Amino acid sequence: MTYGFIAAALALGLVALVLAFWPLIRRSPTLGGLLAGAMLVVVTALYLLVGTPAALDPANVRAPDTLAGAMERLEAELARKPDQPEGWRLLADAYRAQGRLVESARAFEQAARYAPNDADVLAQAAEARAFAAKDRRFDDEAVALLRKALAIDPKHQRSRWFMGVAQRQGGQPAEAAATWQALLADVEPGTAGPLRAQIDSARRDAGLPALTADELPAATSLLVKLDITPALREQLPADAAVFVLAREPGGMPMPVAAKRIALSDLPATVRLSDADSPMPTRRLSQLARVEVLARVSRTGVANAQAGDLESKPVETASSGEVELLIDHARP
Image (cartoon, rainbow, N blue to C red; front, side):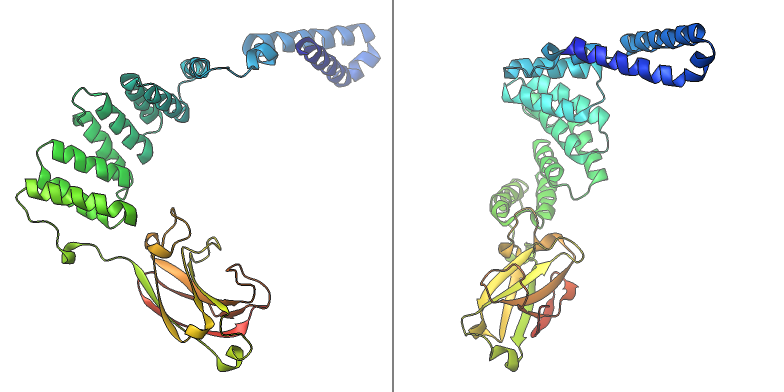
């Protein structure tokens, strides 16, 4: 297949060159033919010199059969072209999976070298360096990587967590507690409990009391006061589904918070929070402002359908209060 491909390429090249030199060939067939042939030889020689004809060989593009084979190929590719941070990250993860922590740290160091403005890579490099150390401690270089990551993204959760770990390892429990307390407001509800336990432990080491309820960050929530016009209510059964939705203004239609109630509950006051997010990676607290609307679904599903009854969408702060009135049918 490889030789057939090369032969076809040469034939096409010859045709192209003949067409290019056709005015000369028509006037002087011998001279024109010699120039076209010479040009084809030059082009072929250049390809063999700087191209990769071996890549056409199926034996050279066969997928590796084992993880070790894949790693060897990746190592060879990175040795040939090292400025590939994603390749270094992949190799580092493979080394870590094999328990080769020192080599993993070196690979992450290379990833950070070629992606110096990626907070994720910098945090991973710091973590790998600590894991590779005999005492599992974040040394000065690892801390410097975390500081650089936080300078790029002050809200970077992984870097903030590890910075707290480094501070506690360095005999600074009060600073660690403060770092983690600021992080507490940004983590998911399932992470907040274990993190608070770590904060209280660090505060005890610093001679401080445990966090009080007043010191905990207030959870983001949106209060929605909702009703429907009497004329529209009469058209619907009492158990019709009403959906209250908050979504990113001008963003994806998928809501960041949603709650279902029955038509018979109206008028109602509904509170939306991160607990009502259908997407764990996209939550109400991550947005400063949201677009809120209510919809009566004739089919019982939240997806908009023609003929559904709706309120006018209202843009508001994600931690405020808004009033909605279902007063028209969706076109």
